[in-house]
Image: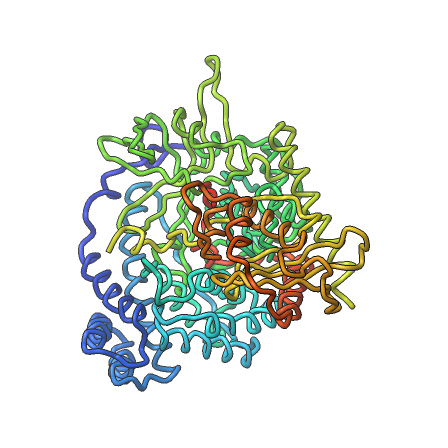
Length: 472
Length: 167
């Protein structure tokens, strides 16, 4: 197979560093609205009215124009109802959707890969309407208080909604978002004494949650099934105090001879905040054989595995069998350049959703203060080693000493970054691979075994306490 | 705006540090208090619900059946001392000191300096009325272990990256 880019699938870096037309203008309108949420909508000031108008004007040429315009007017007058707040969240999401699309086009230019064209199925919208309404009421209260006006009372009322939603699989997605968001707000109370506010982040979380309260928004319907050989590239871990998700990025070689495609497989769980590090793998491991396969450097054979239109496998072990050995770096060098990327679901079009597997080698590592950069064909790409989970063999030092890297291209705060998933480095003239998810399936590493033991003990204590105290 | 203010994945709360949970299965900084649950040393079916208020350091300790703790008369009992030590392990001394508003004279805060600093202010014994809500928060916390994992994708978790930074 011939890689799309000559030179072993090496990435172009210039599309990642050149300015994107219209990006600053779109983000300025987003910022104008985000500043409105800092102060809150209870008694809007003239500057807030201007921010609201700016957001509405930015979507004036879209189907949202009328609703966003009306919502901005009502909000500026201090009389926005919940439906107006949903409309404002939608306008903001549409702007960031356009930013996402422009950035995503740059990523495809850089990788030389093509993007799958998908039609997304209609959603039925049948989840618990009462709980969604309760969540929307809480979010509306937040918008009125503003981040500077939050206190324990308004924040803590999320707890009931979250507790009621968590056991329902159809509402889990919104529940875990609200849980992480409300924990951050609770730790930041009272808002009046906050020294700084994560302005973009909280507006992101607020508007995404608001949109997920619209019935039907949460579903991720299966768009069919796939067969074939699944070649893992690496695993990305995401966590907040009471939730964890491990997302495996992989290339699927379809059994019907179609071109290889990039897919993901995720497993997630709610967790007590004291379950951390290796404890996260212990929680997730029993529910996805792929984690063990990944740890052992093996492929898996899929049969009738359900998949969504955006390339997310809806994993179930009964549709997967253990395959032969598969080296992630061989996959990255040979198969990845020919793979077709998955498209984003309409609602997930946000720059934060960009996490695109790439392979790099022959870069120049530079230390940049506390951080690390890779020089790629004369362009500088920041490396986000902070995202490498602590419970694994991959370390920032290993990344700094590496010669080849499998990573995820991401974009945040105005720039593309590379999140390392695995690196190759030379030890005694031999290439050694280190994976962020190296301990996903278990480990014999000395530090790893110790971390696993401590995590096992912590969960055992909690289970014992739960058994004795929970059902009394 | 700074990069942090315009970062979607800005880190807001540092993750909890691992600690042994046998003695103090639950501690949190919430509702204006450091509060938690301490296992009884003598009866495996009994736990103490202990708390110290931020600012006033008003303290309370009682069993989950709302019997007062014999040790918490006039000064911190051993349950509260254990709670402070474990909170420092989990959240870091600096965050605990900041939350409780304990001024350390001229040293780095530690579990010892925080305990001494609060005791020196001769705090009053507070009401144990919060015990029921703390205990129910602990049960809610334990219930997270009973929730089944899922393989449905959660796109919103992209906003919650791990961090290697410690509290």
